Length: 194
Image (tube, rainbow, N blue to C red; front, side):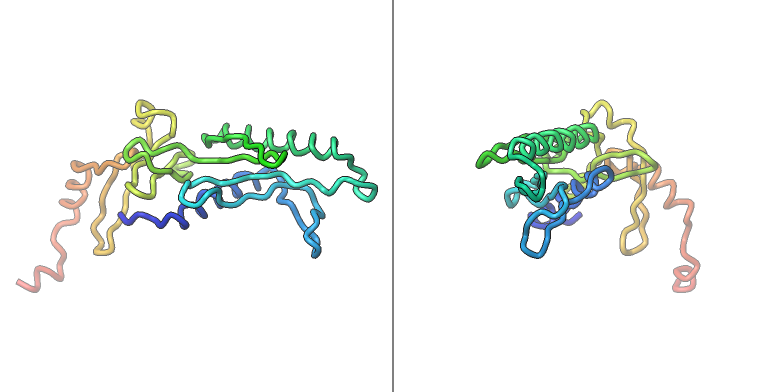
């Protein structure tokens, strides 16, 4: 299994967080001058190589035109950031609140892989939300190894057509894979070669 580049992983985590938030909340829209036209969230990669996403809530600029006071805008940021954090935590993400330059933002990361301690990415298998480590292939619920025995099994096909059956946690099911290979039997084209 090839390990993804650091930047690919950063973008994948940020994209997954964005997809989760879009299920319930609008993304901030900006006018041509760069001012917030429609309040909402924005998300992107956190620090390079950390496999984190940074999420902020943007409000319209306080003033006469928007009808917002600075206190209103700050309260809105806190209410929505809290709602974003609650949703992400319910789905297994780790969320830290960061205050930088008097601005609240969220740093979001996925559960660590129980096998290699690398970051995981969300995946839905047979209707269940789980996490998969792109580095080692290990799957997890993100709640501890004892829960991972219940993960659904799955198959992967190699480029040469070989099919492997895996336990839900990502370990090869040797017995099932061998049984599947024996059911296939010899290829009729190969028999002609002898």
